[in-house]
Amino acid sequence: MSNVKCECGHQIKAGTEFCESCGKPITLIEGQKLLNMRYEGVARRSKTSQKTIVDKIWNFFSSVKVGIWIIFLTLVASAIGTFLPQEMYIPQNITPADFYKDQYGTIGFLFYSLGFHNLYGSWWYMLLLASMGLSLIIASLDRVVPLYRALKKQRVTRHDSFLKRQRIFGVTPIIDHQESIEKVSNNLKEKRYKVRKENGNILAEKGRFSRWGPYVNHLGLIIVLIGAMLRFFPGMYVDEILWVRDGETETVPGTDRKYYIKNEKFIFETYGEEDEKFQETIDEVGNTIPKTYQTNAILYKNKNQGMAGAKPELVQIKEGPITVNNPMKIEGFAFYQTSYRQGEFHKMRFELEEKESGETFGNIELDLLNPKTNFDLGNGYRVEVLDYFPDFEFDSEEGPITKSSLPNNPAFIFKMFTPETPEGETSFVAIQQNLEPLGENQYKMTFSGLDVRSLSGLTIRKDHTLWILGIGGFIFMIGLIQGLYWNHRRVWVQVHGDEVLIAAHTSKNWYGIKKDIEYVVESTGLNIPADQAEDKGEKKND
Image (cartoon, rainbow, N blue to C red; front, side):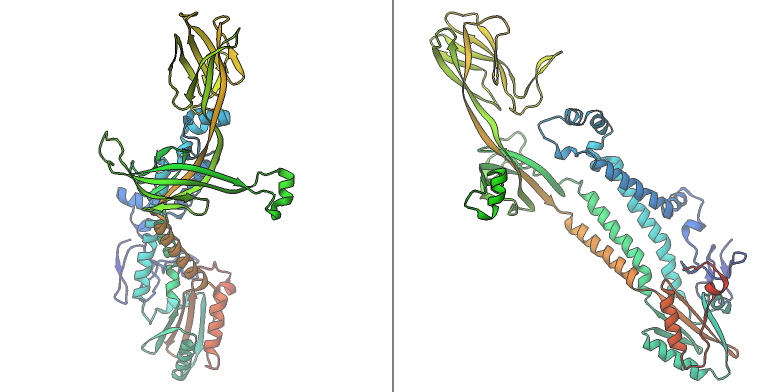
């Protein structure tokens, strides 16, 4: 079908069901009694243009079914990502492949192999979000533009066949209709309808803005999707956990070495006997209820940021406590106290001892994160660290291995040199273990002391997308309220010879518009229009 010209003079695009101006039906399905008023019968691009590749893409994404499938797939993918922790929430000192396999077995291995450990930053998840946004944009434009054009161009005087094919329609034979129509007009105004008159005919309308509610919803969702996708752009969003040991200084994630933070001291306090309101619980579980845990921190700025290879030059810019509900803030970053670890092994001390006499010949101290390998004890006595296993475990095939780089279960292989044993003796020392793998030794390394320290778990947050998400959510709620609590109502009153035709349509709440019509025609001498859908069993089109 090509473009045609209606008898009212309006140019009608191909695919239009009835004239946008006068309402004369152009195409009617056999047996159809009522007009399809959902989009005012206008031609949509997705229904009329199917030639080029652009048309095919447009038609694909304008489909509501396609949009629902995209939303469904996105929800399924999002749910899969919550099945196991994402990579950002696992310990940073363990490789993701080992963590998922060790902790969750075959399921964890598959989770990692399929890339679900970093699902929300994956290219295909971003593609799903982009497809959802594209579907919302195209589906909205495909409907809202022609709908707006049709509503804007609608005339007061409509074709008789348009009125007769409305769901609510009635005819009243009457000769002197001027007074009745004037009363109808006044009654419509009392009901807050906007009344337009033309040649003695009336078009009364209210709540047209509610027709845009779904498209306002779509706009809000699109803005939310844009905000969600922006979170994966550098500098827009940071949400990471940083572990800092007492006395250590670490670079702040997401700042490109601009900021460093030092844990001066981690403080942990529990409720005691003086806290009477917790006394019953304390009696049951002991003094284990946390009262305070905070990090006394110093925040530094690196003056040499951006200088490749330059050693950081730190300048103190902030100092103070970080607690659970009182973060330290700087330039959009917030540092929250979220976790802690106590009793991490820090330093271990050993003495070189002759087994038979028990005489010692000096001691060594090992920093368990960065141990020295050579110790000269003087007088010909020295010790070498041949190997170090921070998290010792014995593998039947590989021998001694370490599960991680954290000093959870430290073990050492020492070689001891003395004047009596210049070739050296080898000893394997772990917690409560002192083995001699190459035969019996004359000397041994005896454990003499242990230092422990606390770790503070700080969550580093920065979110430049929050305001975008807030605006999107606010617009979405406006659209939701707009579409839920209002409806578009129209009433046509038209003189046709010695008859007065009354027709009405609403986007929803037919009961409400029927009550309006009853009030409008009361004491006017006009008949109350009937609901043709109820009378004839028609499908009730919006």
